[in-house]
Image (cartoon, rainbow, N blue to C red; front, side, top):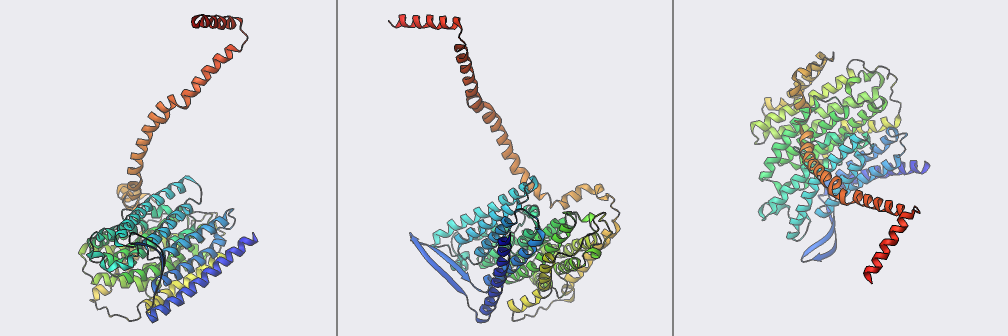
Length: 576
């Protein structure tokens, strides 16, 4: 066990040092306007060069810094959350493999090496989702893996199309994509891959299902690794899709995604799924502003969101761990009395998620909303932005009420505390990031400020919608705290909105029904039919029947001997 503790500590120290060095290098590259493009030429086949390429610029190094920092905090947190797990060493190896795959994806400007990191994320995420070996985890893992395979196929097709250009370094072709024959298809394929990995409509069902994984994995996945890979890829490809029809379709789907996720979270009672749906909503925000042509803003929100979302998941994990694995928010309540530090950090993360002034989420989210309101969008996208912003604060207020400040519903689970320093220490570090991270990032990424002049109505619209949404969310839950099953009167509507517009059902039933029906037919006709008759069972019956005859011949029966002698004599006479 001592070697495991040493390995755990050395991994954390290495990731912290890597994070610091990457952040310092990133700031240096911003100041000097430098970037390094490292290329190893392996072989050329018919003028198509096979190369191993790395890119070290301010964006990749800054993202690597955040991934390393959050991963080190997650490993620290794992020591408390997974305490007592028999396979904690396997879990740590998987987390490190996950981080390595994400790092490989971040520093790769080459489509082939991107695919290696992309597939590595998909494979390790599947193994982590099925870490707790039960039927629910197996179903969630299969949905996650199959949904992401669609994106893998899209990347493979993009690789095959780029081969005709003479190489796979998309950096060389980004500015030419819209003018090159067939390159619009490459942009569409990359957008499709990004939509599957970042769970945009119609691939949204796997994201809440992936909550079957342990909470430290959720904190890592939903902040800086798996789900952000699609956004990061599109940030790199942003100039390739600029001005295309694909960009318009992406804007519509991402706006619908953030509205659907916000609506679904208001009807969900699983603590981790509510936070997962909030991630889905924020991914919709990133994708929508990216499809409006502001890639740096999307990257800014990606980084600030990573800080408070990792904190939010860690707080949720501490609550679940202390409440003996209860995840239903209806059996929580008044946690502020028993877990003041966790409650403080959770409220801090929730306020940052809502875009409260001067926290991490405010600097990126408020800027995104103002830029979106200034952009040439139609009334439908504008309304979806406003509704999604209000719904975010609405479900956050609902979550705060049920878990932190509502009625005491813990029953016998009264003795819960904040005593685990392994779980609270990372929260404090990430809490500092949730407070100061947004301001620091805005100074680093946008050193030259821009003036945004808007009418008073649009300037205060985001704040007004947030206050209204929070008030509605808190008051409605305060009025319905007596747990009357009034939602059964409107069951059709509640079921539709609470199930992400039947997305999990539509993602699984049509595919599984057709394949299972054909499989059942072939099983009846083939495995249980002719192949059984002429195969295993048929051979078995034939051998058993022959063995019966042999057994009769070996029973020392005088009749059998005489009959065999007569048959032998007749045969000899006929042959002669």
